[in-house]
Amino acid sequence: MLLSGKRSIRQKLLLVVTATTLAALFTSGIAMLYYDFRTSQQAWIRDLTTQADILGRASAPALSFDDPKTARDSLQVLQARPEITAAAIYTAKGRLFASYAAPGLADARLPRLPENDGYEIDRRELQVFKRIIDEREILGTVYLRASHHLLDRTRDYCVILGMVTIIGLLMALALSYRLNAGVAGPIVAMSGVARRVMESRDFSLRVTKTTEDEIGTLADAFNGMLSEIGRRAEILEESNRKLGAEIAERRGAEEALRLSERRNRSLVDASSAVVWSTDGRGRFVEEVPSWSDYTGQARDQYQGLGWRRAFAPEDQSTVEAVWTRALAHPGAFGLELRLWHETTQRHRHVSVRGVPLVGADGTAGEWIGTITDIDDQRRAEQELRELNTELESRVASRTAELEAANKELESFSYSVSHDLRSPLRAVAGFARLLWEDHAAQLDEEAQRKLGFVQSEAQRMGVLIDDLLAFSRLGRQAMQLGPLDMQEMARRVYDRLLAQHAGPPVQFNLGTLPSVQGDRVLMEQVWANFLSNAIKFSAKREHPVIEVGAVSDENEHIYFVRDNGAGFDPRYTAKLFGVFQRLHDAEDFAGTGVGLALVGRIVNRHGGRVWAEGKLDHGATFYFTLPKESADGSD
Image (cartoon, rainbow, N blue to C red):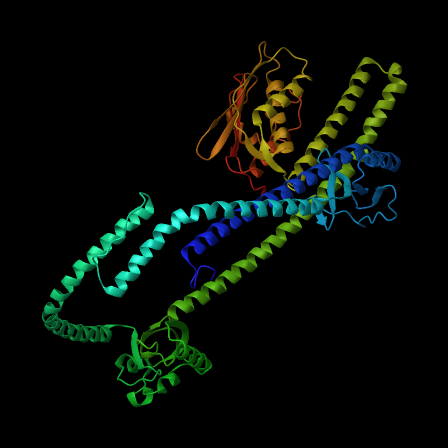
């Protein structure tokens, strides 16, 4: 050790200052180096991810219309970013759609298939994958690969750090050398007085106090200690005279110890556990009645090392290994074994504990311990494990059935979309052609009926879209992040109001707390609630919509209130079901899927939905979100 040996206190103080300064400079330098590296790396990743997102948005129309040329033209803008060496756009099925290589690069080394959203740092290159999503449907993937110079930046930073460390050490050494004499001088003087006291046994010597700081306090304490030692030397002589009386007291204590030993033996005899003791080599030398009662071994059978034969043959090697280790390195041990039980005529699980009585030479002169029967406990644990295994098997079976049902539901949703859209497009198309080619030949009633066919075909298309959106909601991954609910509600309302042709609406927006959630899904919640409020209050002379929130200890409660048509409270339970409508389609348009979507979205965020209303007296819709982040489970 640097501070051990015969070094003087001056040298030690100098070493302490130097080591402390070096540690501080090194720690702060490493922290700054790490922070700069991480900050630069994260900034580069964010920049490249943003570039990928921009390219994805620009390439979405090209993917939708299968236009590779437009996609390649979009990638050519990367020539302005020389650090980007390669780029590619893949279709949703993983096919390479368009690619880009930096000028002068012979081999772009593009991945054969795209990966999930994320990034990968490989040596001096950064690779980014970003999915292209339009209206919550994956159109394809953008791939970017760029070179970075973080290692060069880190190397330059290390050079600067080394220079700062050397300069700091030199300044610390110069300053500590000047201050060392004032700190170490009084301590050296005190050391000299202590040496003379030890040599002459003269406790009247004193240290001269030269400062009023901690060293001065130490000098006062040292002088006080010398005075106390002198006083105690006088007391020691008086103590010797009292030693005789203490010897007599010790004899009384020994008698009390023997009495305590007899009591302990009686306690062992009354204990339900097996209490054992051996000599230093692990041999039974005394009679152990509790051992005989449990195992049925007579004294001549368990004396010496014969007690080991009572353990199960499969465990005797374990007993031998544990005792060998314990005898070589005395210390407490514990293990579980199987010991013969005379009453039940079988080996039972027991807990064996042993503690050595170690002498001054470090060897065990005796061992004592206990054996506790834990067979019933282990049998119960085995039964519990078997029960858990059976339950896990049942859960796995139910999970497989649920997954199969989900796959069937996905297949059914696709079939519904495909099989219903084709005839629906035919009906709408022929109705439009009939109107365009023969409208003049149709009377007013025929034109009215033809318009009804067109409007119902359009309504059927919206209904299919809503049904598919509802079925896809459970499979759509949530992208959680902080949401400004007040700004979101205001933006959604402004967008809906731009499409509103009814009377002016009085919109009262209160303070809404922010939460964690999926931005796209939560905007759909606000769009459904606010569009319903606008739609059902449009027939009022003065429509009023109020949005607000309250919070409790665990969740935020948001509400949307209107003074519109309301609903019969007897049918409140039907509001959030699929295709459940409480008003005629002629009075208020809709498919009956919107509130079902809302209920499912809020449930995925860990919240609840409900409504209150009365016919012709408006309605209030509530939904809650937890204060902590939602886990995205369905």
